[in-house]
Each structure stands twice: as C-alpha cells, then as structure tokens.
Amino acid sequence: MDMVVFSSSDATRCASVPKVFIGATCYGGFEDIQAMVMGGTFQNAVDGTLDDSGDEEIAQLKETMTSEAYAELLKRGEILTIDEGGSEMDVWAEPFAKPPVVYYEGSPEPLEEAEAIASRILVRLKSGDIEIVSKEED
Image (cartoon, rainbow, N blue to C red; front, side, top):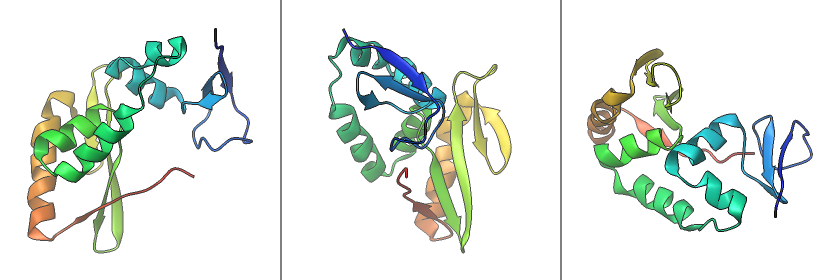
C-alpha cells in the first residue's frame, strides 16, 4: 500500500505547498487534493487505481470552448487566466469554501454562477476583447 505524505520541501516539481505525495507521485497541494476529492479521483490515487484519462478530459474541455466546459474546468480546480490587453486576471473556484464561490473580476460569486460567468468570459473571448492564457505549473 502506498503512503500519503504531506511535505513542504522545494525538491519536487509541484508548485504548491504543502505538497501531497501518494507513493512517489506528487499530486499537488491542498486545493489540488480538494479538486481530486470533489472529482472522485483521490481515493483511486490512494488505492493505486487512478486512471490518467482525467488529464485527457481536462485537455478536451480546454479545447471545447463552451460555457459548460469553462464552468466544469473551474469546478475541477482549474484556473483560467484572462489576458486583456497585456493585463492578466485569474478566474478560479473555491468549491469547498463556505459558501462555495467563483472569483471573477476580483469578487466572489456563488459557485452556482460558474456557468453564467463562463458565458460572459466566452462572449468576451469570441469578440476578441480577451484571450485565455495557458500557464503550466513550474
């Protein structure tokens, strides 16, 4: 059985701290683990039965460019970085906050508004006002 280890070491590729390891694999930090629990994949990682198709599903959602896809990405813990003429803004969800929220334009909105927020983002994206910037973790 693999062990779950929490670490604050900088010796790994995971950017967040504390870092959560299951066996030798770093699964990220607190918010990453929350997203796994919410998505139902954490126990699979602990059991060693995690299917990597979730990464493929995330990639497909990013390519889909629908309000439903963007809302799902937010609910899964993805951060959307919006570039508006050189000024960047992050949009993210905190599904375990009390109450659950989505942060957009600097203010918290109810998580139930994720699809409406994603629709507003999509309209601005299609009009050319903004771009979605893909950022990879260091």
